[in-house]
Length: 239
Image (tube, rainbow, N blue to C red; front, side):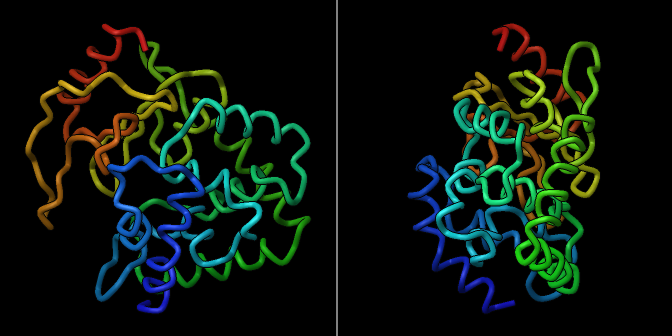
């Protein structure tokens, strides 16, 4: 895996510039931490950012994936909505969605990561299969969330994106692999800059609450009680 880590590290600054990543994002870490090393059996694994870093998305089609890896924007969400209507084999949206179709967000070991690479390489080589995967992922995303007391909520990767596509400004995802709730928006901020997150950490000493990579758009909550408090704050500002 060291060669993948080295390649992702070398690509980080280029992708950060291409996607205009916020300064608080650890460009290298946001990529390399997804790649399992050693005995790690619970890495996030493959995503569109990794596909860009490893050259599995053509460089001239990487901009949308680079943007969405760093921080969602209203313009990027609108591009997805627009390009998904026809789903051209080489549109940036098709490449992004095809890569998303491989993403599992957790529980990935070295063998699983290799399998993800092989799976995506097939989509890279076959335009028809790539479009089919992208269309299926787009439809899947739109069905991955439900409204719970008016809040878009899901438990699978892609549910927040599906909520955005459907017109919702923010969403909640529970990730059972980590036992964490994620709250996100494509707007500049969730409005939680003054929220008091818990200091709970997982078995590896990693924070289970607070902004993800310092983001104002993407935070995590370690309990249902903390999530409820976050939702109340968001509702109060009518995001």
